[in-house]
Length: 164
Image (cartoon, rainbow, N blue to C red; front, top):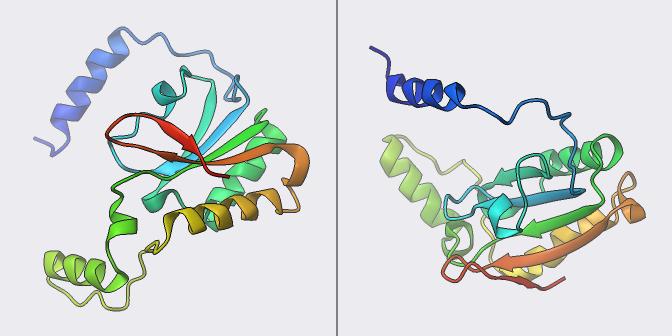
């Protein structure tokens, strides 16, 4: 018995009626999205998109990290990305906790010292959004090759508001 049996069983049921094959891996709507890993976000549905329309990069806080930039560069040059959305959200743990608070919570949960860990806490969400959008817009391999916008997703209403 595996710890993953329930998920493997669900996957077999999914595969029995699988009809999403045959895609070429490109973003058919020309969209890339950097958003949070929060499960309250349904990236495709919130934008009226479907499977195969967008490239989605998720991380805590929807930060434009070096890895996110790497994904966006590949998207722009190889995967038909023409518009990039950076989308953090309301009530995000990365914007409502301090680095010290997260270290303490993780350390308590882990039972070991986590004072050395960095979690990329965001102290001012809108300012960080402006900075992250600027990182994408000024990247030498992205620049004006794609339109870039910064938005805030409201997890209670489902609405996006453009801020950058």
